Image (cartoon, rainbow, N blue to C red; front, side):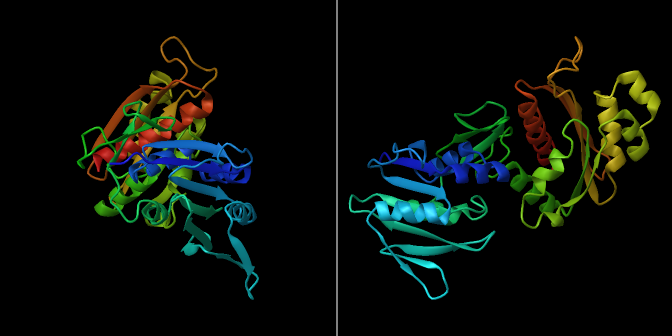
Length: 329
């Protein structure tokens, strides 16, 4: 395999768009490596550091910013009667969510350039990845909860490229799928929908799953039971159970998961201490209990202690909770 060097060039507007969508540049870099890039460098469009010869250049920016890139590369722009613009000497392809036109072309030095306007960058990623590698197969990209693997995807998730497919026991998937994509697929395969009983994540589980188009097929409901009173009022968790074991405990999250589960719905429950304060010697900041219950009565629990800021702890909780249920399914 030849050494392919790629530039991922993102404008400030593109960075804001990625942040809103919850897609990290770590995921984009991993997907490019699965397509065959041996090295991926990240550049801001507003800098000049990307103006050098590499094998692949992928630009993610507003349409007007992409047009300026094309002009820099010597392309010509022609206005269409419908008010849009045609990029001469480039091939176009359509992306959805929202519906928009992207472009790709080969420069005189043989490098491939892909211009992606703002919008969903993950939903149809195989389309632009196969443009870069001329339709070649994607390498298996194993996604692991934790720090196993050489590619940092986001807090709580790492990726590892392997020459051969096959899913080790601790791998969430071997196709480079987002946690919500993995969970959605497995729920559909089992004919189930999911419910969430959330405390410290404050709706983060349901928010992440609902990012997917068509998530209504698998997401049913969520309870944000942040306070102990809410756990009792909405999920009927006995106050004596919370008093005896504490809200952050195996007993309470198991009760929360069973409360949201029925014959056609699985339920995931989480309760933890996201910080930066609120911890104790027995339950320091970052401690979280999570439970996943299935309609057959099965319930698996796990306790983790996550490092990092409040935001990083909450994100890791979401990823591990998804992995817990996906592993059961």
